[in-house]
Length: 193
Image (cartoon, rainbow, N blue to C red; front, side, top):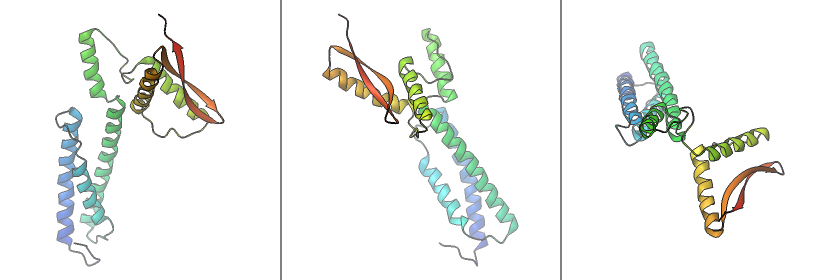
């Protein structure tokens, strides 16, 4: 139902109440997702709330109380959405505090320790990733939002492909700049017998 200038105030009020309840429900579901109690990202639920917000967005609301309540809902939703996106990014990068805490706890049981501010990785690979970022930054190139996990996965697959072709060599990588571009070059090192 498209609302017009001569709007149905009760319909808007119902939508605002719905948005308020759904934002709180969505907040709870996301917290459960971040704790690992729910396995699936509640993206469909989030999209439903966002579409309801967009539905009301272009309609001029004459009732000041209702307009204020709607603006508060939008503000709350945007704040939570920023928090959820930031947390999802941290989970993807492996730096989310709860995940790092759990990993460190299991590592302590095994007698291994890591810096809690860095994701788990091989030191050489992370050092290469940092050099890659620094070289891109030095040349003022876009980083293309490549996360460490993506970088590591791409290089590991390339490394295994190359080691399959060159069985007598160990493959490592180095960062070079040629013609104003950052390149990752494989380096073949002969295995010692």
